[in-house]
Amino acid sequence: MIPIRLLHSHSIEEDRLTIYPDLEWQQFKLIQVGFAKSHGIRLSYSHNTLEILMPGRNHEVFSRLIG
Image 1 (cartoon, rainbow, N blue to C red):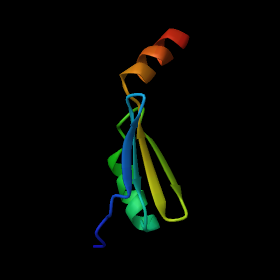
Image 2: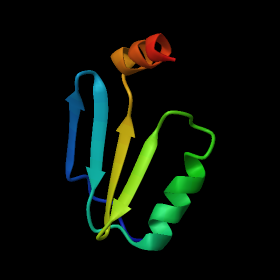
Image 3: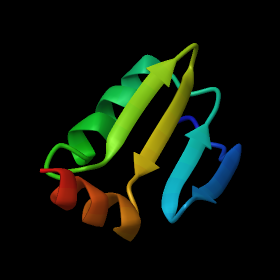
């Protein structure tokens, strides 16, 4: 198994964005399966980089107001 290296993690107005570089497609697919039942978490994969966006409390409040 290839170790996963965390490149960057920070908050965006209480949202949490985590970036993992140098990730193989097979690793991404396994992570995607692991998050399958986690609603609201967005995964983006491009050029061997995975971005995981976990919306914060403010995001949830505004989405309910808009909905």
